[in-house]
Amino acid sequence: MTEASGRGVAGLVKSVEQGTDVVVARHGRPVAAVISMARLLELQELERDLRDTALVLARLATDNGRRTTLDDVLESFGFNRTSLEAELEADIATGRD
Image 1 (cartoon, rainbow, N blue to C red):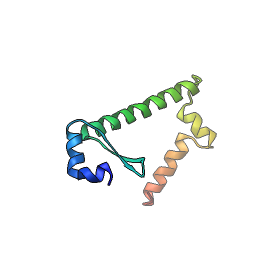
Image 2 (cartoon, rainbow, N blue to C red):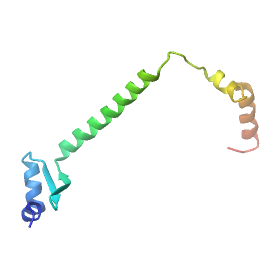
Image 3 (tube, rainbow, N blue to C red):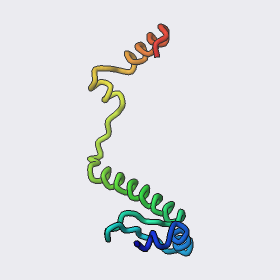
Image 4 (cartoon, rainbow, N blue to C red):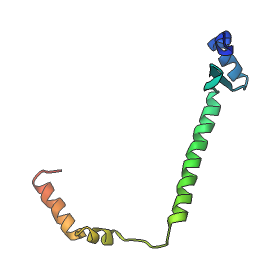
């Protein structure tokens, strides 16, 4: 009988409520953890912070300072604002979305 099955769900919850994270093992290998909701929320916030930090670092590493305007992007695809606006107005006039 394992420690988790011996303690039962109530025992695991009681340990967590007392501030102890519980690792559940099967055949001697950790397979799950029981943690408090406060700890889960903390871990989720840390995960978001880490994701944001990674994004900032990636942007810093790849930013060459050059900026591209929307008009330049449109032109690279063979469009301009006037032609796109005319196309949109034509679609609206014919009832196409």
